[in-house]
Amino acid sequence: MGIEELRIAPRCLRQSPYVERMVGTLRRELFEHVIVFNERHLKRLMTSYLEYYHGARPHQGLGEESPFMRAIEPPECCRVFPFRGSVACIGATLG
Image (cartoon, rainbow, N blue to C red; front, top):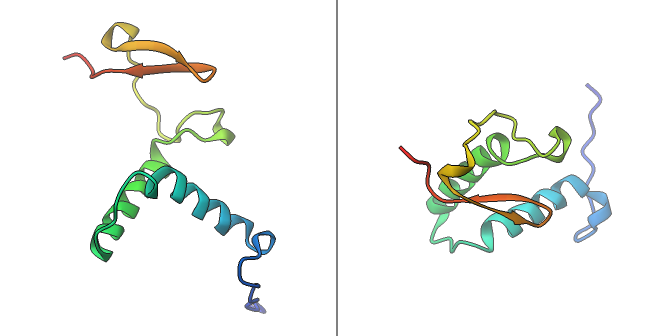
């Protein structure tokens, strides 16, 4: 196929921007909020996070929507308040 492996310089962010972005995202959204106990726990956390990342997390390329559609809940099911230029909902779904 003519594919050649290229080695990048250590800690050279411009040579691996996609990997660096994913590492930064994982650090900010996952590892700053949990303590990893062992490798099995890490694998479980990563599997769970990747399901969230690819399914429920809002994506800029989709107009801040998630890839899988979610049911829209009426405002009376939770407490709604403005948050960082958008609207956040806190509370459990009724019935």
